[in-house]
Image 1 (cartoon, rainbow, N blue to C red):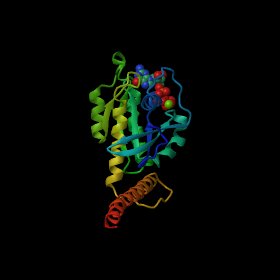
Image 2 (image 1 turned 90 degrees about the vertical axis):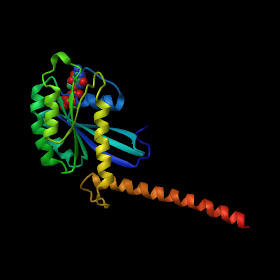
Image 3 (image 1 turned 120 degrees about the vertical axis):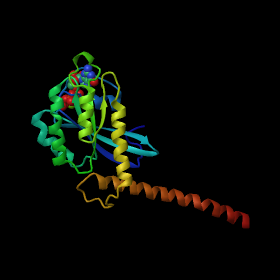
Length: 224
Ligand SMILES: Nc1nc2c(ncn2[C@@H]2O[C@H](COP(=O)(O)OP(=O)(O)OP(=O)(O)O)[C@@H](O)[C@H]2O)c(=O)[nH]1
Ligand SMILES: [Mg+2]
């Protein structure tokens, strides 16, 4: 499905974690189904768009790929504000990136909306002989912080679409069940999403009207 197709919901996701854990590669795998072993550290911030259908809803996902390097942290902090879902990534072969998770969780608490959805990803799980963070450690951290957890490999392509899809579903379900203010105040992402939903409801309403007109015409035809 192309990114420019009409959609029911438009959501913003953020990918965060230390430099080199594979954030850009996970996104590249999810959007373009490709992988590169070259390390081109992200400068500032980048984003990609994917539109997909989940439970009969067409969802346009704008996914922001942040730079893990310390020098960009002030820039990336700004993007938390509009995020409805966050993918937090560490590298299972790098214990420092696992320890760094505490920093990222704190950063979310300080900068992101309270109701932001989160998923934890332990990437590079293909590197069996270099692993130094066990699956149990990852899973325990996730449990402590009430996060869904996936081990993944952008390289060997496992766990990637599962993690993104889980996050997208969580965001979609929250938007649909939660009562979000209808007016776009210009400050956050959620009202924007609500606006899209509203437009879509109007669209449905128009369609309903055209359906109800049909039997009327039919009756008129019959009676004359
Ligand atoms: N073996 C293996 N290597 C990976 C995987 N994902 C990423 N890499 C490699 O890890 C390095 C860093 O990947 P990036 O995606 O650029 O890392 P990043 O988190 O975006 O880094 P910053 O942009 O600096 O924050 C690259 O050399 C990738 O090829 C994976 O699943 N398995
Ligand atoms: Mg990157």
